[in-house]
Image (cartoon, rainbow, N blue to C red; front, side, top):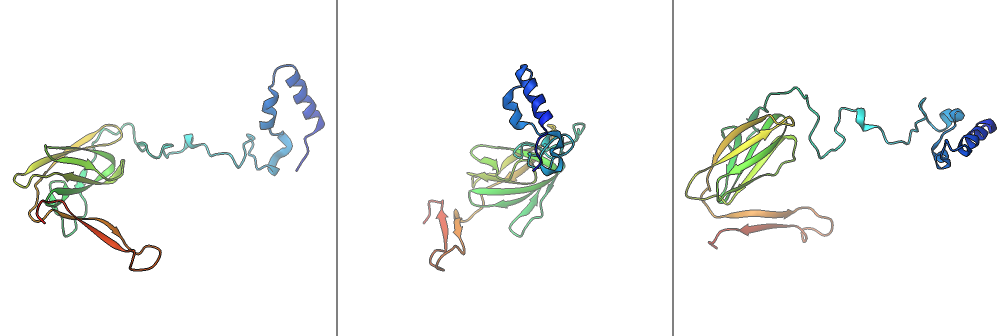
Amino acid sequence: MKTIKPNIVYLWVVIAASGCLDLALLDDMIPPDAGSDAGEDEEGGSDSETPDAGGTDEPVDTDGPPNTDPLDGDPPVVAPAVCDSAESIVGNACRALGPISASLRMVTDEPAQVTVHAEEPALGTAVSEPWGTDHQIVVIDLPADREIVVALSVADVNGNSAETVVPVIGAGGPAVAISEILADPLGPEPAQEFVEVVNYGATP
């Protein structure tokens, strides 16, 4: 490690004594000739400093909305996801119906948030991550005797929104669901593995 030249130390002490420099700041100051020993750049920064996120294209707050083109005036384009065998394409979504609930899946061509408006008594909520392009919506408390409409509003970071509606109805059959699975845990097997099945209906 290089030593600080005596004339530089003398200069700092003189400036501090004249009231132009807070001595507490001396700990943060790096002598100009410390150079590559401390890993600084020409501005005196250290390799151990936190990178400046302000000049990057990525958002600083990972939970917030993504960066986007401020001149974008087009709403997100909504399309069905790749539907599996238990789903059917209805409108712009893949729809799977159960006795008391429905699952809707769709994709957008840009990061977006989904707001769900379901008729009473049904309650809808988006269960996918916000500001993504893959969206899943779960609607519960479906009536078994009538079809209701779930309205979905999909908005990008600039507030441009697209609306789509999907009809849902409670399917026939017992209201039974697999609520929890523990597969292949640490420890003896298969003693700790289990599947929990819940009967939400009134019929045993």
